[in-house]
Image 1: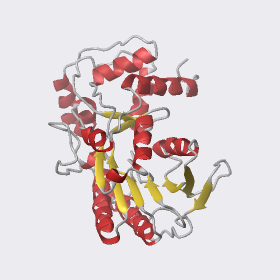
Image 2 (image 1 turned 90 degrees about the vertical axis):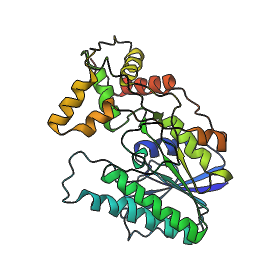
Image 3 (image 1 turned 60 degrees about the vertical axis):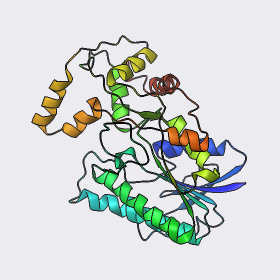
Image 4 (image 1 turned 135 degrees about the vertical axis):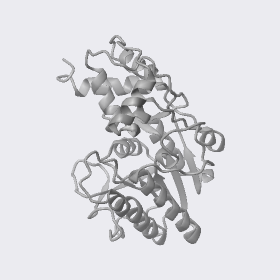
Length: 320
């Protein structure tokens, strides 16, 4: 029996991971929460936030593995004067504090959910674990700095650290851009993305959770960085086609040239948003497959169908 402490269990990835671990007999799960709930069938520990002063002592007793999925994520309307400072308080200082206390408490392995944004916003060739880091915003910068501190802790204490950098994660109730895209595609509207032939890697939440679970007790995962994906890269055009096919809706795509998107991005100062739509971002996940003998259990089509089915079930009023 392996004792596992999970942070971020109420988030998109964390809640899926929680369900997966609870279904297994060889893992004993505990979760750290800022607000206790009676609905969880596992041990819960109340913490007063995620920062450099958080006391993790009670939650870390007898834990062998920590899966750190909690973070300050992308905030559309960030009211703080210096957003990087706020990201650092949670994602860097908070992570370092948890990892240091975990090492002192005897935790053997610390699994950190980072971001492909550490590598960059666009790729010329598929990103690998050997590429130089190029974080492009406060969120990815804070994740990169957290990785640096975790590597230092691993060297100083001997606690294993596993770093996972997923690209865009999709699935039922996906937040952010993917969730917005699903809602848009549910409406009977033609869209101007019929000529966008870029290549972008994604990972279905079921595949990501499977890989995280895989890393819990894999000896070869110790002190490694992994980039993972579904192993099938899609253009925006093909992604929309797959989603609308799963919805049993016509594609309705207009072939607007990509150069016009770039022009609009420059004129409006929103090139980063345009890059996420029409730029390339590919990851090479062959290391995870070769070193750990891991394969994504779900195909892209299965992941998209499950995502659409969940959306349709939860948004019946929206799509009428």
